[in-house]
Image 1 (cartoon, one colour):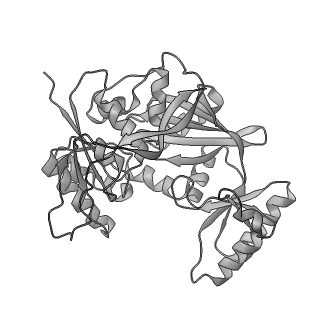
Image 2 (cartoon, rainbow, N blue to C red):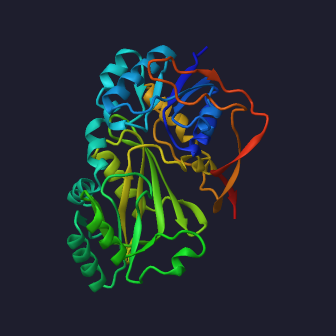
Length: 376
C-alpha cells in the first residue's frame, strides 16, 4: 500500500481550495493530507486543510525560510507548494531536500527572470516570443513621454508595477479629468493622466512601472506542467473574452508557452498569459506558480494538481493530453465553509502557533470570487 502524501500550501489564494479538492480526488486513489498556513485566520484555505496554522507576520524572507523549514520538518511535509516568498524558498531547495521535502516550484534562476517584467520581456524576446512595446518609467516626465508616444501610434496607454502578481496596480490612462463620473457605479481601472502626474510629483519615492499599450481580448492563460528535464508534460490554454471562458489547444498560444516553459526551466506548474496586439498574440505575463484558475482544467478531464505532485515525488507522468476540451463556461461566486471559530489573533512569534484540524463549519459563509464554474 502506498503511503499518504503530505502537501503544504503556504499563504495562497482563496481559489486554491479547489486545488486542494483535486489533490484529494486524485485518480491514483492515494491518501493526501493537506497542511495550510495563512496570515488571515478566516482564509477558506485554512478551513479546507486537514491541519492549519497562522503565519507569523513581519518575517524577512530569510526568516520565512527558517519558518518554512521548521514547518516541513515538524509536519512531515512531502511536497511544499510555495507562493509567498517563493524566490527565497527555492534558493534553499537543497535544505528542504535534506529533510525530505520536495519543492513544487521552478529553480531560482527561472523565478528571478520572471520576477521583473522588464527582465522577462527582454529574455523572452531574445528567444523569439513576441512582446508588446513597453517603457520602464520611474518619473512623471518618463510617464508622459511614454503615454504620448503610445497615443501618437493610436494606442491607449496603461501601466502596472514592473514587479507584482495578478492585476494589482494595473491602471489605464485617460485624458479625461477626474469628475463625478468616476464616483458613480463601481471603481474603474481608468485614471486621469493629470492625476497620476500630480501624485508622482507629490510622492517621496520613485515608482517602477511598466507602460505599454492596452492589449485586446481574447486573453489566453496557458497552464503548463514541466518536468525537471525541461520537457513540457501538459499545456492547455484557458481563454477569456468578457464573461465567456473556454479552452484552446491552438498552437499560436501553446507554441510560445512551451518555448518559454522549456527554454527557461519553468519546472512544475506555471501560467503564461497572452493577449492580442493588433492581429498577433503577444506575451502579457508569466507566473511561476499555479494559477488560481488551474482547477478549471478539470472540465477537460485532467487533474493537473495531482500530476504536478507526482512529478515532484519523482513519478514521471509522461505527456498528458486532455481527452476533450470542456464547453464554454463562466465563473460565479459560491459558498465555502469557514471554521466555526476563527483562529486566535496573531500571537507573538516567540509563542507556538496554533495548529488544529479543519472541522466542518456550522454556518457556511459566502466567499467572494470562490471560482465555481458553470457552463454557459
